[in-house]
Image (tube, one colour):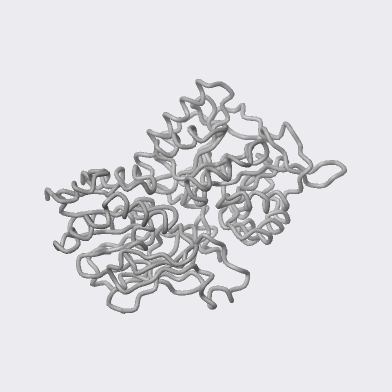
Length: 256
Length: 211
């Protein structure tokens, strides 16, 4: 049967790997993106996501160069995203070696572009990333631009909307959980995954391997984490072993 | 072993990953967008991502269908990957009924065309995306060094069914058992992406190069 995917997320700002806490990206992790990829390539990760949070053009150009370099030796699917705003940019990233594009703000700002990207490159190429926050009075609400702007959209409805625009997967992140070490927001994972027919990637908040197990059990097709994988040796291998020990079907080594 | 390994570039999909993967196993793969160049190929790879009908249109309009058929009749090995494998069949039910190259007795159908698949609770996600097992006979040299049941990377919404058992290279289960690899004379096909299947995928490509 289809396995639950373990995804390593690498967040880059101006070419450096950074940690993400409540969407603030200030801590630089002291090793570079190439080292990160090499490590994950060796250690059983099923997919890699590269997200760019650079605020300046120079940082974004660096990001494209890194994608090109890294994709040469990345033999698992590579999804890249951050500030994708037009078709040329999308085309460039794919031409440089990305397998999938992660889009977020344009789901809100330019939904037609999402549909065009899906039609042009195939929906399996488009990951709709969505962030949400728990507001005081209205419950969970989708937010954009690194959680700086809160919309009036309910996450479940937003995920269904993204699916109708043509994304092939949903990547779900809760602002409060990001970097908070308390695991995923399981009830939202369940609610969203039950209401879409495309796969869901859970992201944000993983601190213990059991969080990954919980995410899979709640309905996520893939469980993703960023911070945690950067700090422990052989971490993705341990994560998978823990998941397998707790009944989650995961990819194992397939060579004799 | 020096051979002319060629990838048909007919405008469907991102080929860079395939080139990188062949590089990694020490084989130089040449990208050709001119069907005449298939003439001197020893082995041809037919990639494919996207919609069946659009891909067939491109293959036909750009002269690739004919050129590939010539290669096939000459007995040169052809490997279809993902949509590339589907195109080799008689046809697909994707968005209506579309005719493929018809190189073997097989058809392509959406997962939802199978009552068995539809009856799985909760409803399985589409596309079939991620790592799943291939089951094959140990005699298949393409899978030398690979465990039966090894996971490879899939991303597709339609699956192949073969009329003949002997054309099945490998099988996979996703709510329903489907044909994840085909084999007929000098034609091979893989529904999964070996270039994205990590060490197992690279080993398969290495075996393919060595055939």
